[in-house]
Length: 211
Image 1 (spheres, rainbow, N blue to C red):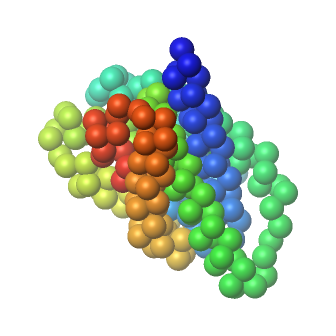
Image 2: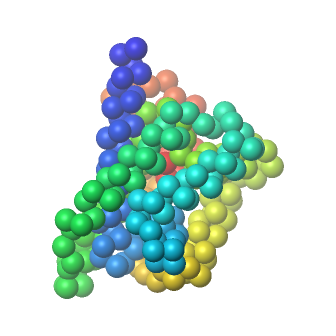
């Protein structure tokens, strides 16, 4: 029971950090990652909040995961996106607009780093993968495609759909490719080592995927 409480707290902390990271990267108008780019496209085209766009995205992939492999679903599958959405909608109105390019670039990079740290913490909690990551693993299990190949294809589709819906391609998604994976992996390993979680080796693939 104590370990479960620790995992739940880690899931909440990780989800909050992910929401903060996405908002910081997004308000700079330099973008975060391909998933956030798709959220932005849905936000623009359908005139809904970023948090609501997150819920739509999550619901779509949740249905796919349930159809393909329900074992990827846990309490974190539902709780994490809900927390992220609430955090994004709560804080986005308080983040000022930055005029300086270098300030916007710095804030965007900080946002992506925070996003990656939160992703690693959420993955270490191991209470259920997010629908997006869960779908990647489900495809791997069902059709024997590699995790890397599946993730690259999904990210590319998110990027294309986001652009088609009106989001603008920016430097954020490009930078995120190089820093989200390593920072997420480091965050995941450190949390797993601190709390001596047995899944450190069992779910190593999670260290390179956004939760």
